[in-house]
Amino acid sequence: MKAYKKEVRFTIWMALAFVVMGNAGLFFSIFPTDAMLFGFPVTYIIPILMGWFGVFFLTIIAGKIGNRIDDEIDAEIEGGVKHD
Amino acid sequence: MTDGTWQLSNPILGLVVVALTFLLFYVVGYLSNRKAKSAKDLYLGGGNVGAFTNGLAMASTYMSLATFLGITALILNLKVPFIMLWIQLILAIPLITIIYGTSLRRMGAFTPTHFVRERYGVKASIIAALFMILVSIMYALGQMIGIAVTFETLLGIPYLTGLFVGGLIIVGYITVGGMAGATNNAAIQMVIMTLMFIVPLGAIMKAIGTEGWFFPPLLYADMVPAMLQAVPDFFDYQYPTKWYFSVIPALTIGALGLPHLAMRVYTSSSLKSARSAMVWFAFVLGLVFSATYAMGFTGVYATSVEGLNIAEGDADKLTIILNLAYNPEWVTALVIAGAISAGVSTLSGNLLAIGALLSQDIIKTLKPNIHERLNYRLSYIAIFVGGFISILLAIEPPAFLVVSILWAFGLAGVTNAPLIIVGVWWKEANKYGAMAASIVGGAIYIAVSPFVFPSLALTGHAVTDGMGLSGAMLAVPISFILLIVVSYITNRIPALQKNLTRDRDEKLVESIHGWKDVQSYRYNSTIGAFITVAISLAVAIWALLPWGM
Image 1 (cartoon, rainbow over the protein chains, first blue to last red):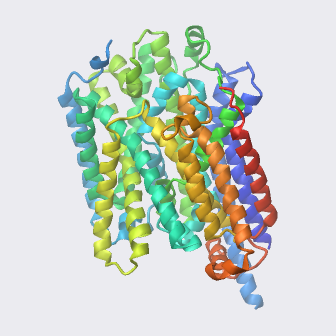
Image 2 (cartoon, each protein chain N blue to C red; image 1 turned 135 degrees about the vertical axis):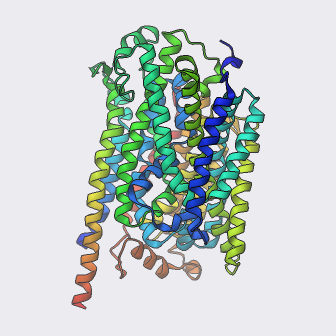
Image 3 (cartoon, chains in turn green, blue; image 1 turned 135 degrees about the horizontal axis):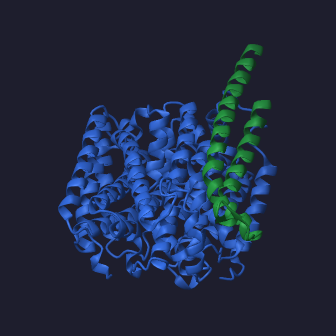
């Protein structure tokens, strides 16, 4: 039960995190700003940086958690077999 | 300068560079393919590709001619909104991997439609396969247009001659190649593309006088003040929030249904390797995507501030034109080699997907006892015929090569993605729901596209409708609703129970997530299904309200 819940929660939250990270333009279309960052308008450079480094960072986290959940599912199956 | 002047004055230089590039591809393809003995080897490279190579190959398959030529053309026309649209395309492989890629790899699926067959039965899988062939052909069409434009500039020959010469050479290469060659080649192509795009861009920026020329993807802020003076609306978002939202159903979900991308996840040697490949993919693609935004920015800057004249019909050639204008000819020849690499790697992904769809998902499904050798030959024929059809469709191309590619994303999002996503995560999904979603959703998407009934298009904004943004915002949620509601109802009609395989479906769903037993509490959430329907309904209604464009 534990590993299953983790798997479902991980997939939903991670997928949402990826969608938010890759669609910062949607956020700025609702909340426009004239601020500048690194010489660019914030509404331009932040979506680009989030779409590169933000997504890259999330892939590292997603890879690590995904591998751990696989191990937990395997452990739960082995645990179940022992009890049978 | 006029239309005809944008070509290499020394075509022999270009030809030599392109010939050497192809020689490299052929040698790598031949060496890799000597080991391919079965259809599985041909498509999946034996399922034994390392994480770094596979990450590069994923990026290469994805980074098509659209990235090399198409994006810059649309940045020239639509400016920043198009960059905002493009950024989220990097989510494709990470989302495929976490939502269903590892599950389908655990199952040993050849293609996404292989999963649809196991999950929903033969009829649903053949419908899905036919739609996927259409998706792959539309995607390949964009590449073919790019290849024709590249050969046109390379040799100074008419578009049509460029299309047939370039198209046939590349289709021939892919037919001889196969996925084993393609995976290794795609990794090499990614390196060539990255170098041939970013290094010449640095030289262009240096010629223009930008201080950050040594790292083109991000260091061009010193051009911003002059750009704002010449093109005050360059950074404006221009379109309503709804336009930015529509990108999610059309392209983010659309990419989840692209057969040639998902197949890259299955070539990994293990699940852990597939997840590492996703990390490499994100890093390399982020680098190249950021460079394309810089190239598009530089293109607008060059035309508006520096007075470079690019005819309207030449927009797709922007990357090449900037090189011709600011760099020596030999650099442009290398850029053309990079563009052709981009076209070859994506086309090989598209055409191999067509081959796999036809031979594995249609012919082998209808005739399971077909001899392996004959099926293997049919794969090759399908790859060639698919390529030839995309050449014929490119004879009269749309205004921008990216349009047909992005439209294909939407079609994949409507006809394929819901079947896979819901099929992997909800045991109740059944064949009636799948067929209703695929057929009705697909028909609505095609009907509201400007290509069939222009009067039914939802926004009247040619590029938005043409790219499938408006159509997908309506049809993708309808497809999810139909799949869930029809499955839920038909599962409760006693007369239909004999046609359904509920026990088998439950075992399959559990096993692809790694479980060895079946538990009723797993992957069976009615609340989850209800929330999905409610959100989908809201999105579909929003799509039908005025767009204000």
